[in-house]
Length: 220
Image (cartoon, rainbow, N blue to C red; front, side, top):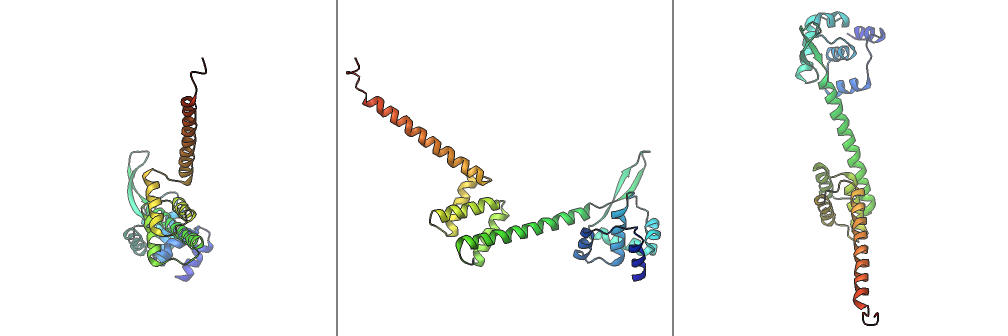
């Protein structure tokens, strides 16, 4: 089997991408499963012909079929009926399962990196190590779709106001969520507009006061 794999790899018939190796490792694929997966990943014509797969990989037809069935059970490949230009239906191999597996794993990795970064930011801003309960609270915010930007913005707003407890931060996040803020630009624009509105109202009040103080008798 090792010699067979060596011949396949050195023949340059198959291109083995990093993501395919990761899928194989994550799903604990057997050698035959890995080879069949690599075959279809490299094939432009994905019409299901197990005899062709068998001869191309140099493995027994039954072994190739067993490996393919196992890949379907694991959700990495599937068979779809597709109509050709002559209106005939052919069974073709779909690799959607592999791509979804890669995307999901990638998103999980990104989420873990994001969580690590946000935890570090909290500990840096607070100047201490967080408790398990506080870590769960942050995860809870992330799980319900609160952006990292908003969470960190609420943290800094709380610290600016001289309060560093999580209940206060949660109240800020809740207030911003109710107003539909998704980014700190939304928050800052709202605060700016509110400040401009207050200044405008002050100017109006000042003019009204000037009118009230005007000596209408002297003006005649």
